Amino acid sequence: MLNLVKLMLLFLFAFNLTYSQEFNGLIVKYKSGSISKQSGDFSSLKLVKLSKNEDIKAKINYYKNLPNVEYVEPNYIIKKQIQHLMTLTILNNGA
Image (cartoon, one colour):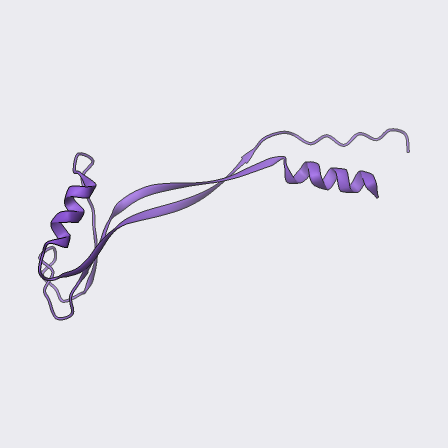
């Protein structure tokens, strides 16, 4: 039974679970009844993509100052990654 517990503990530490985030643009919520300048429709929630050279904070401030915007926030995609740290070897010692 003790060997099983050791094996289970070893298995728990054999993998490393990490998270990474990737910027995917800005979520802009327009006030009810306002028209989005990006698409010309009446949808209130938009994902605004930015080019790689655009300043995220400056773009957020730009949208915050528009009178028809309720809120704006960065959109991140969270990715879970499991990293294999070691190979487990179970030895049979003649038992």
